[in-house]
Length: 300
Image 1: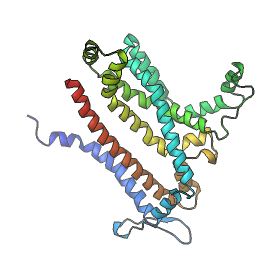
Image 2: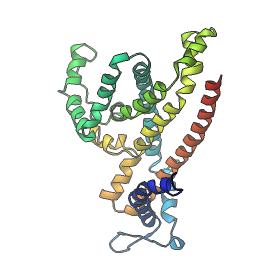
Image 3: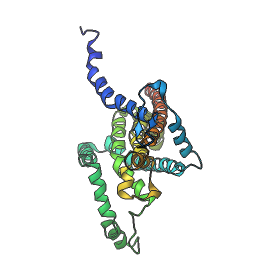
Image 4: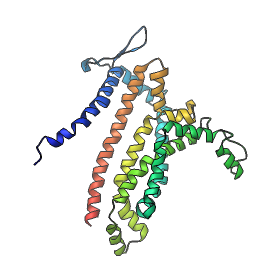
């Protein structure tokens, strides 16, 4: 018989890893964001004692993100980019995951390998490859001009919103397809057969059975890609580099590495983390409800 402490002890390495690589660094960011600044060198002075924390920098960040603030457009742009990229990922990824899980047959393994293969290559290298393809003399312009979609080459790398959004989709869509595939592959085919026996059309069976049962995979994949998208800064930098396409992550990177106030960058990081925490809490609440609904559908 296993001792009572065995399973908690097996989780200890993961807990220590989390504390060392997340909790401690995050507390350091808090100490910088809620600390002070050296009046002469303009360098951050961390405040490690929570009783002495200063919320002035957080107030400054909220002022800049509020309507009329210098970061308001950047915040709205980030949300719009992420929402459109997520919608495109679902539009492209769900059919791929559905076909792979339900109809691929013996080709299922090959399709999964093809989906995973881009992840074997550095994200930056894949984006740099697209930079070469999107140049004015690149293959994208050549193909579009050959097919007469365009009459002259376009500057795809000159600060276009579409380029950044499509780059986000390309970079993150595999992380959406995999949990979707896992959720769809676990659906018992007897549920669909029962729906068809009760007179449901293929579309009705999909809408009333498959889609609700795959809701956990949709939400899990959405969270898996939207959270890093909100903090992404290298994708806009690589495929655009223009201020008109900068995101919140670009502002954090600017203040940490090129700006005069790393403290403001740390405070913006805290605000972004709080926003993402709200999204995570909503996800956990929704996933719990979806699991209960899936259990009800399965029981029927």
